[in-house]
Length: 501
Image (cartoon, rainbow, N blue to C red):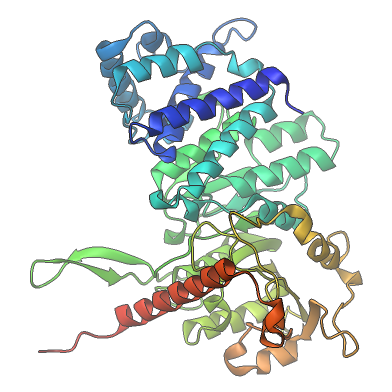
């Protein structure tokens, strides 16, 4: 447990966040500013005893250049620091790229620097204390749905259950090509740290070389980099190694590196598109189709492209867990082509059907697809697909009934992480309510469009009105369904040719 002093620090972080929110600063803006200042303070601490390291933040742009000032001069110096550090390389470049000051009140900026950040020795705090406090702020930011941050945040209980199934090992290279705030990477780091006795070289590999993430949005990438740094992951100096997080579009290229494990929740939402100016001089969006030689099908569907990308970046026998929306399981055209290829070339062994109400992004019906890449063969790599229906008759909300790790215990037990060869169905003719059921490859490939959106449990609310959920939950689910349907209609509309007048 955290000490009383550590709990007080966490509470101070929250209290100051609420104070700044009164001035219109969002949780996202607050966490971003906190990221800049914590990094500079910890970099300064490393130049002093007992560390006595050479400074890696340029003189005049360091913590001392801020803490000596107050008011308007401080605000001016802070803007200069953010602007110039954004042009640096390494972790500096990732954290400060396109950085801007969002704290418009110089007096409150002075208080934040002097009273909150400068009074603590952050490096002397336990790594878990620093990291847990920061992760708490990130989750609060995700709950602030008006800011749209929820799409970057996957529920921690789901992440941890997935990692418990995947069992990453020391020495493995682990990738999240849609890293968000680095939740999957940190869970993998925790799993390896807690489940293996690591020697010196393995510890160094885990800290510097094991974890890799790519994030499209610079502001989110900086949160991910800081999240990892506060948990003791990444180079302590810019010249010591590449940052664990890079800013860019994963779908542009597979790159040259191949990975042992991929854990990812690609962004939900519309198909890839670019902003254009049409013939009338007005801004419009045009579908962006990703064409890569390593892709089996060309499509503008981001989720289908991420599935193809994950397959491309895995080593032979590499393994993946990918969160995908329902349409990836049943969509025709490119979707069918990709599914048939995946079933043939990979061992698509497990599908977890997720309940609604667990994501901050609304209207999401999603699943986790587990598969391993296999070497080329005349026979299909998939032999059996095991499906766990965690959706039917399960109801969660973000406020009154949040998902917790215990809720996924049965799935992890059924998954049998230590030996997938000893799985046993819980479904049978005698037990039709069993949530764990297996399907043979031949049955899957014979289904119309190789549709993997398979379910068999009876919705209890259809049989017994007394078993209906509370009205607010029913309304929330209806809203989710309508949003999801509207999004699908929007995608169809975007792909239709424009009729001539």
